[in-house]
Image 1 (spheres, rainbow, N blue to C red):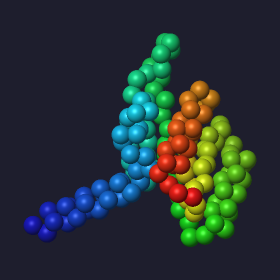
Image 2: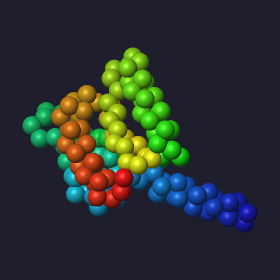
Image 3: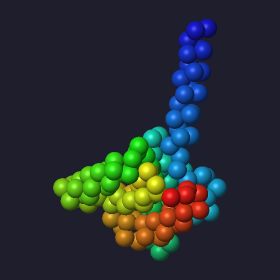
Length: 137
């Protein structure tokens, strides 16, 4: 009996954490032609349909997340830190991009250069528009 209750509490706690990690609601993600595939501290999204004209099945994917701080000074320190990390990145390339809203930094990234070059600019614009309409700076 105690094990069942404990498992239910753990499940409810996990769901709460997952909900907090979702940056963009699923209806909006769907309107962009994507779906959320994982929510675990960050929201991972994947295009619903493959990229047309490719011999292989390409499904662009991105990771969205936010980091909030107690002060603007801490936000600025984190932005500086990310820029330094990007300069020092030695494995491939760091595709993180940031949008700052008040005391939060919203990130978007991918791990594939092709997705970064071809799809990230459009996704970044959609992400910015979404954040502009949902979060007041």
